[in-house]
Amino acid sequence: MRITQKQYAQLIEKTLKKKQLQSAALVNDGADFTKPTVVLGIDPSLRCTGFGVIVADRRSTKVLDFGRIPCPNNWKKSQCLINIFQTLDRVIQKHKPEVCVIEGLFYAQNIKTALVMGEARGVCIAAAAKAGIKIAEIAPRKVKQALVGYGAAQKLAVAKMVQRILGLAVRPESDAADALALAITFVNENFKRTLKNCNFI
Image (cartoon, rainbow, N blue to C red; front, side, top):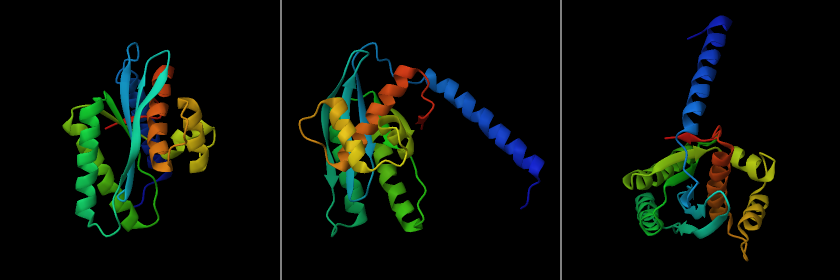
């Protein structure tokens, strides 16, 4: 189906207005950091999902927990998905986060890879939804831009910045570092009171 340039312009304008309304609503949908608030970041992956838990208020941000959920290559997909769900469920029960921040979808040339990533994201979202906590997503480039100042930054640069911000003695592995980066970015967006890079789902 073809559309005219005028129709295309109207579609873009309508989309932009919708985004503006969503951004305005998100300011009221964020977390209340006037008291210590626990935030869970998740970097979904079928074979090695990363997670990071931080607690933040207007004075400080501290790490509570972080790690990876490895799934051996000889495991079936279904085994990996249930392992991710059960592990995150335990993490959520232990730390009781108020917000879960998950990495947003990104463009993948390989359709199979995109589908598998979508399945991993699905069980991560389900684990958070089961606990009844707020769920937000942030695009990977937005996280890198916010923390490193460059949207195409390498994972090592992100991990080093996370280590520096949280004052960690040991640099976290990339999957856990990405998860912590998501949580940190969400906290910073809240402080700005814009949440323009966050999409609640």
